[in-house]
Length: 417
Image (tube, rainbow, N blue to C red; front, side):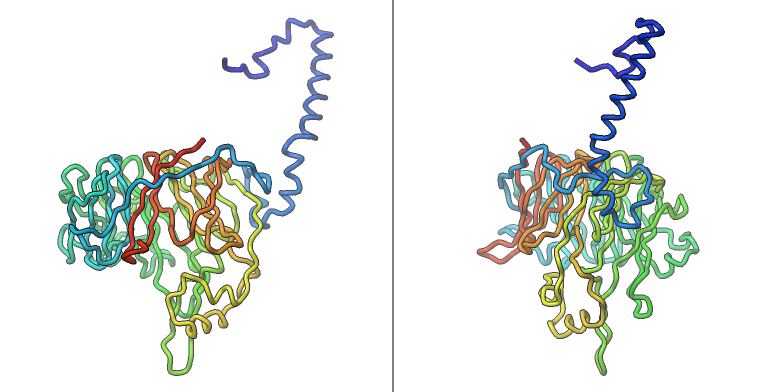
């Protein structure tokens, strides 16, 4: 039975003037006691530890430092998708899943998209190398929405759309480069990420190429783009880009890479087009509406892991030789701790999945959260098996097959008790 609000449970005028006054005094006293001993008081110590830049945020929810999960979560492996007798994947890239559990895996070497049926069997490939309709130079991201598959091309700066039913080419969306806003962040910019909105328009972010004279302080602007690739709003909000590590030396080429130590921006979008943004430095997530207007934020106090130079040198994201990477680290001021977070995405039930960095570098601690930040469940998962999609009650990770050494997409059934 639904409980009535406080003011509907009691008809105070039935008590008469004297009793009404007494009731009001008692109610105020009860309210004062509740305020003194409620969560708002217990959150005071947590608020003292808030990052300085978060203290002026309105509608900020501060959670306890060690929240108890509401549910347990379990996983059961069911299928693998990848190389087989029917297909040899050159270099696996991004993948997405549709409402029928078909898997679409981009191939960065062959510049095509491999399609697998729900039962794991290979169906066909779509797209190919080139610059014509339905062709790619660099498949950078995939999305499914409203019976369509969207594939962005970082080199060609466009989005190619395929029908999920027929897998035929539907259309090509060219970004109207001549209509880019005349702001500093858009000079020499390129499409970075995109999200498909409920009305078929897009939220897009744009990045800038690495510049030696500006390794820090770059911004990532976000815009609303219509279904034809036209800018339909001014910049709705922006995030600070990653800092770059630089290797320099006499007679050596200057090399840069995004720093895994100084924090990076994270973005997710819910089914009602709310935008969730964070930086990995802190477990602080902000919510904006579809036009970029700030709505609220939540903060989880999180004990970050101390960072040493030796640990930094062994970071798995390093794609250079050790001498070059060591030069990069020597040319920067390392923070005292690792970032709090590593990644964040939204599942099809509008739950946030957030990976946190802990002392055990073989794992991430994953948090599943409501949109308000309330903890649903927590679990540990291997770092080298990244979780990328949760949809239709199933979780999809990326793993290396022990026998063949080839990368595969692995599906698990998710059970939350």
